[in-house]
Length: 143
Image 1 (cartoon, rainbow, N blue to C red):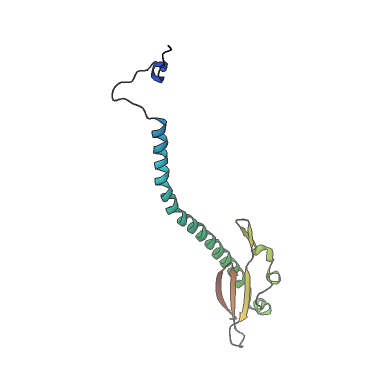
Image 2: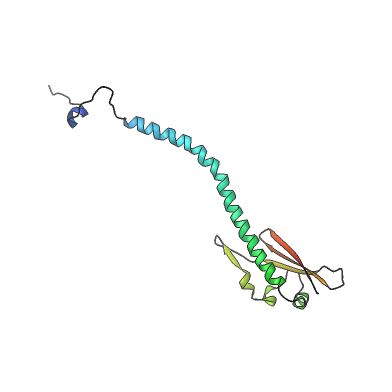
């Protein structure tokens, strides 16, 4: 009759009392428990990650709108008066492609509006720039 040898006997190691290693089942169970515990933590951080990405996009839109608004407002009053409209053709004011930008693979172009805000007196213009839900306004006076 053949004698069956244990793994410890094959490896030549003997087990001392109180010194045991972890079995594969115990290791798998510990990893599973860690995954179950870490899952809710990841779910807790997910909204803040999406919020941060949304805020980042919002910041880019605000900065681009501010840049376009400053660029339009820096033009002289007569040029703006002669190019009133809603929307304004940016190509008449400067190269419109200069105001187009790309974010996350999507191309955005601002919409600019220049309207008489003086009630017909002709001395005050309202300039509005809108990009993807962000709207900035300013007034430009003739004097």
